[in-house]
Image (cartoon, rainbow, N blue to C red; front, side, top):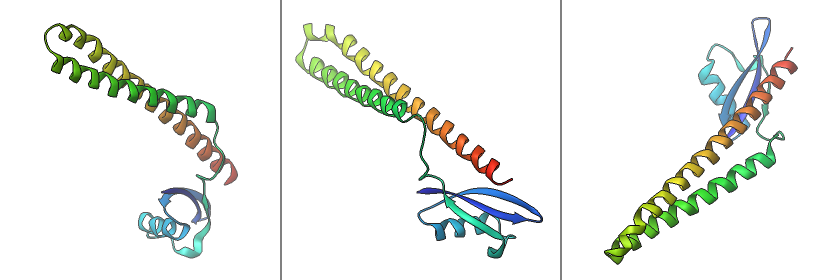
Length: 136
């Protein structure tokens, strides 16, 4: 799914709406659902804004690595917990440690996903600001 910036005339003002679609024509159809009172002659441009370069590329990569390490810890913690429970008496002493590894892994997944959401939000905010500046 791509995000498109649709510039259109509303009265005498130029406005920008952000819609999603697989293609430019699908984005225009989505726009017409949102703004049924704006006819296609008043649409000035439809631009795919997801193809623009993004900042924070290194930070996003690090967040993905942290998330990946987190998933490995979750799988390892759950796997060791199951093995220790099946092993029996003395092995049960290791269960709290393996559960802790799984929980720390979940925290790493959370941190990685939250960081990526933060960076994506910053990129989209920058793109919207650029669009607003260009539309004046």
